[in-house]
Length: 462
Image (cartoon, rainbow, N blue to C red; front, side):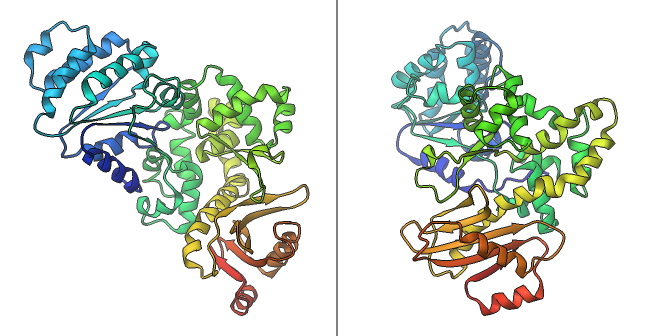
């Protein structure tokens, strides 16, 4: 199974760059297996395009490979056997293919050139400025090592800074598109699959043929032969040098230590010693820092919590990492028993809250609330937590919501509890109009359904 889903905006942008008059330079980057190569392949289909994959070999070896690729692409057999020690010569030959039709050049895993030769971004900058900038060519520099791609192509200190005409940081696919991947699955099944695969296309493909989430986990994660078994280590060791330290930070957060002080205490470190690790993990889209949605100055808020943003990483550190000894000793069924016992309440229920927040943006257009909120997220103080709070910054309307991923139906008691908790939220407390929304994976009691028909301030959703 190989589906191409939910990349219309990125394809549209790439085609706009392609159709612009003259040259364009686009940086395409994002974590491994998120679909960069597939996006690029779809974009160049039917175009005058050359794709070149950089390897982790030396710059010299990559230049030789590029020379062969250019020779084949341009049908230049003399170039194939020539001795060329200058990248510029190869690009001059390549430009012959732009005379009658715009050309697209994709250099995939571009960061390895800069890794093998730190001066290479300067080399490419000179090539761009003196050869490519005025030609009928579109260059896409693609890469999967986020920190290197940002430092080599996007940062102010990069020689290529200011040259790009656009960039795409490719993200995971949203939950709303999962039905296109798994058209025969129920809504509940889709939530379960999303809670593990987290919108990464390669993971989604792996899980496609399995009958349920547990057989998918058993085959694709608990098996030591599957690449997902050691995926977090693989991802991190290419981005950071102190893999063990980063593992410790993620493990502490996965165990429920979300405040900076608790993470530091768990690791026996000073809070200032964590700054580097947390920032890097946020830059890598593995962590996120959340504050109560009503905070006026989120950056300076002391109520910040650090949460694992990547669903698969979260699952792995909750259920695989703590049970590696069982799996390594051939007792993976013990790990699976723990997963079956705790997956719903210990993992899927929190992912369901994220899905509900995503659904809120869709409901923003359809609900008939009579206003459109522009902020939505979680809220908490020292005593209470509310899954969803949404409001219009310059208005008086506010929505309070709860998300219940449990076996039974949600009843009026949940609504009453939510109404009580809402009193603790200070936002526009004396002159606001309150609305309530309840999400439930297994529906609602008849009593609550009847009440929602009578009260226009209550919305029920799944």
